[in-house]
Length: 120
Image (cartoon, rainbow, N blue to C red; front, side, top):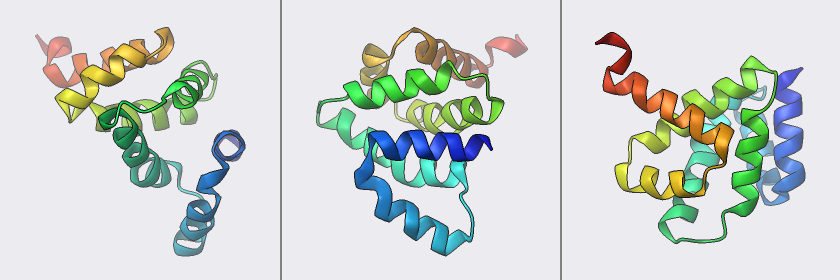
């Protein structure tokens, strides 16, 4: 299942989130990728960007997500993580300077959608 691939890859790179993951499972009785990444990961990324902290590992993880064939994984990246970043203009500008090509493309697509570009 794609959600298993996503969380396993994430926890391999970010083992410090294991307790949050277990708490999430206990609360929800299942892994809800959009909820977990929206609540835990988006907040973590925002903190990294606000502090100009080391973002290389998360950059690489997002790029991994952006290059997957799984629609589910790409939806978690674009509609949960990148959409959230787009709500904070200052954070989005910082984030875009760190984004790798595939992630940047998804981010731009989300911003274009919300700007109304596709409806003009």
